Structures are given as C-alpha cells and as structure tokens.
Length: 119
Image (tube, rainbow, N blue to C red):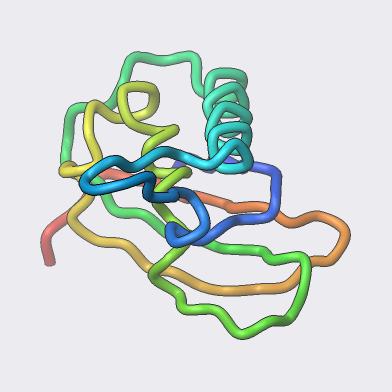
C-alpha cells in the first residue's frame, strides 16, 4: 500500500469552476493554485513511473472546519493531480472508500492506493 498526502483544505468541484457565457467554463484562480500545489506535492512524493494496473483507493478528507459537506464533491483536483503522475488515468480506479475528518491545523487529503484485487 502506498500513501500520498496532499496538504491544503479540500475545495468542492462547485467552487473550482465558473461559467462565462454559453459553454465557456474556467477554473477559478483558487482552484488552479490548489491543483498546481497538489501536482507539485505529488511529484515530490512519487518518483516512479505511472501505474498501469487497476487500483483501489482509500481517501481521507481532512477539512479545517466542521461545516456539513457531501462526501463525493471533493476529489476532482486531487484525482487530476495524480493523473499521468501516479497512474495513467483515473479510469484505472475500480474501488474507492472515502472518509471525512476534521483537522483545523492540518487540512489535507490522504490517499492510500493499492492494486485492485477482485474478491
């Protein structure tokens, strides 16, 4: 099992993009900065070739406050940062378990990955 830790308060997909007219979508500056930070953190932690096999993830979201949040809305930036770095594409993820926690002083996303083994 391999662990990747991405520091920074996770932001929702809804807060990553804005629309500027019909069919025109842009990433917000805040989201772009966080994604670039995630990519740098991934490159510092992962020095191997991207994985090519089917994967299983354990995702732990640590937020800096206790606001109510949906579990499924906080993965876009982190998964995109791992694409072509840790794995070739996130279509390789066949199983994911997500947990939410709170850590005011150290918001982050912890991603545990291992090869998917069909049961």
